[in-house]
Length: 103
Image 1: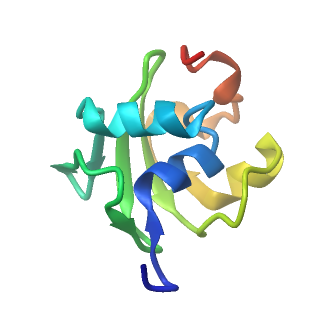
Image 2: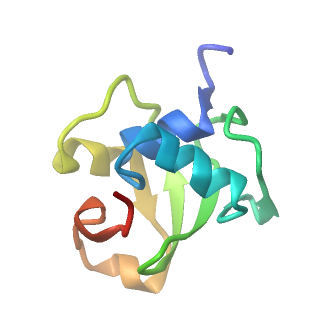
């Protein structure tokens, strides 16, 4: 994959929207992820900076803009720097992975 892109499943895992990479794959394959409003079911889809993702998670629906590609799975504080929340609920800063229902 090009250096300016990252696999969707890896990014979801790095950004802590899924507790495991297989859980990130399931999230995508089950149709819970949209990029720029279009449903994506291929975990290998390449994300680029500025993409807007809509995530239908077990506890909430979130809209985020991709700000950075991940290098590895980091702490919540570091993972939070990978995206900007665009939805109304995102105005607060609540942890995600602690209660994402995966696991």
